[in-house]
Length: 596
Image 1 (cartoon, helix red, strand yellow):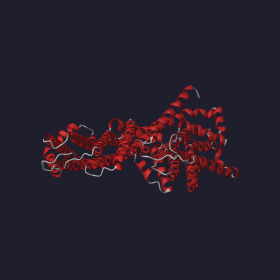
Image 2 (cartoon, one colour):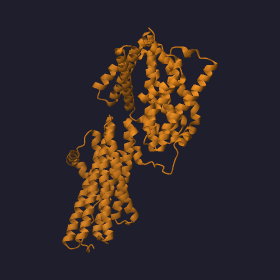
Image 3 (cartoon, rainbow, N blue to C red):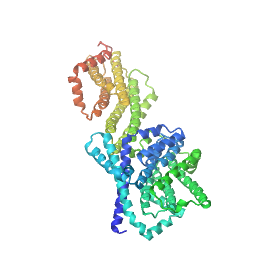
């Protein structure tokens, strides 16, 4: 092989690896995170877990990606270690589908139908369809399918290019002698392990081996141990991903390694023991792509069948290797934002929604507790401390969630996922600001308690109406966020307009009492602070509702939306606002005794 042959080989390898990557991405985006969600939820039964692991890996074309995802699930507390075993075993079976697809390249027949079954025959058609879908179709689903078709076509082109480049090696004695070294089971396993560890894909390394088979120099005696080593080498990706994870996540990566090492050891000992007594004739025959696919699948099915009943022992072995100590890491919400999930953006978006939902519930709890402290409820120290603790935690949520979503937004997201991230990024800022106002209200409650201040009956009645309306808008806006309910979100703005009127009424009545000497300046400042914070919380609730309505329409013009809602659709808006004003009207003004 001359320098140009080497360049052709390297170019073919580059196309092959890139095509596999592009096809996997297209398949993953086409699934839209649904398979990952199923994997997360339906893994209680071990056999079902194996089937799901097989299905997901067959679709996303990467056992490494599935295993890394499982490590992330375990790290986040989504999946138990015992559930992960079956999925990992299934992933090893699912990854063999690639070798079966590539084995079709060996079809030799003059029959037109059989010829069209060869990937090199039908991929030009797929490539053309894929390019049309990518360049000319606006549908996101067709774009993803097109990406998948183009990736598969590039993969097959690379495979064919590699096969053509290595064909001349059949007449090179040095190449044949190197392959003869790999008939030694230990050397063959090491070669397969190193190759797979370097490119971090057993599917790709098996494909390279299938391409070398066209030389006729690769015998089954060399191919079999190489395939065994490839199964061990693919564990490197999961082991790397587990660095920095919690103990159970590291154990999940070790289970993947132990499964392949133990499975390979049992298979090799059993196979070569039988071969020593009853020699297999095929071992000295030249390997072909179909035969390699058979070996690859047979090993993984046999290993899973043998080791699945001992799944709990694999867990115990991993736990024995990485032992517990007193400082056991606690699973928290932020571990759901696992960096590993960024490789599957659709699932990462779902995790962001889960964490943002928890942030929303904590924010609602904080603001409602703060309102209770001012609305005639008991000012107990426990509730006050809880509001402060919640505000500190909500700050952490905004920091962690915001940072994670910025990273996620750099990935290629579907239109729906892009909308979700946009809504969440806008919303978490409002959650954080609402929690700040909760602390401001807490400060007002503490000031009144420390200075033994008390509002007059009139001011207390007005504040109670204000608090009731605020609770209503908080519940509506947060429910619309949590349930993604645009219809409920539309009811928020008329209530916000009503709250603005309440705020103006409370302040004007306070000024009236102040001019009549019925209110102290100091208590007036407190009332002003409370009403201002109430009104600003309602503004943030309005923002949350607008996000739910506007962002899915690919726009966010709050001012334009509110103008349209209030003036173009004024009849409906006025009717809704009047209904709220009847529900939350301030009591009749009357002279009252001084507030002190």
